[in-house]
Length: 215
Image (cartoon, rainbow, N blue to C red; front, side):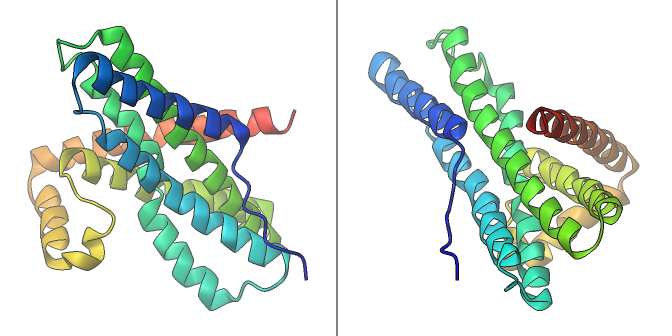
């Protein structure tokens, strides 16, 4: 039996170090802790990467049962929006006037890059599993189909401030919140617009990232 190897790409480590160092410098130089939450967001972005890494390892060793894959696949789908979600934190650039805009731009962009890369690797893990179980065509269909839910999840997190665990911790509040979106024409149009925006960004980012991995 081969041992499980949890491998995090070096590029991600470098970007995490940069993000953390810039956050520390922000506190020391400017006395501002308003972006400390970004470190927590990076941790949340890591969770789907961890799950997909473990699932892929089990699949490669022919030990991934269908039920396990289904259960943890659903959990992964609920968590994966946390990875590209960090990109939306870029809206906070320039909010704190006592901190140079360029400094915050570097901090938030490096953090967003971490989240996006973690998402790309994690999505690719799931695609590899699906390809082994079915075919490349079905795998691609399911992956790009799942991005619809991921994109809507980003919208819910950014605009309605829902978290992934709200599905279990506060299911009625979550269902009511989603229901209110589609009960109001203006809100539903906004939700569809931003979800489509996130979808095309995510799909094109993944396609571009995959093209660089095959060279």
